Image (cartoon, rainbow, N blue to C red; front, top):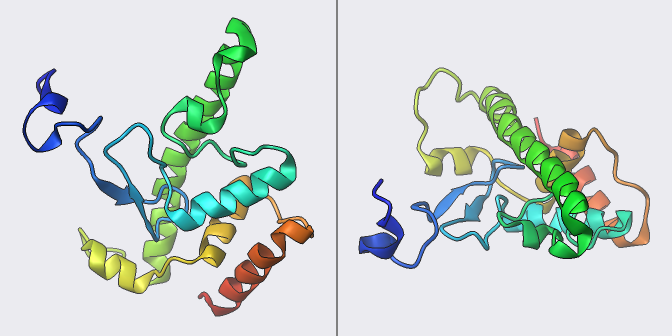
Length: 169
């Protein structure tokens, strides 16, 4: 793309030429895009991530799901070396989310019989794989290899995940 793509045509005012994309955590919902101030995840995954993060002591979430480092709590008050350490870890997690998207996409495709069909329309994918808070909590737990703690602030999330697991294939 030309260097000035963000300033002309239909992408004027956007940071990237992508308005929505599949959620990188649950792969069931859609994530808003087009701006560095959006999340890599759908609303349900952002909510589940934030709830778990708050219980674990991180008000920005258990995972850095914001596209911009500031959305994930990274700022210059950490000092130069602290900033670099945290930025490297954030990048490592973003790379893992990219790998996860491939792994989870394959697992979900197989679970609903979409393997071997070539490209699948998003509408067919969404119809076969409904997003929910329970699906988001389950994806977060599986990615982190972590069980949600029994905590008063996570009661609803635990219930939603249990309900989802009882209904999913």
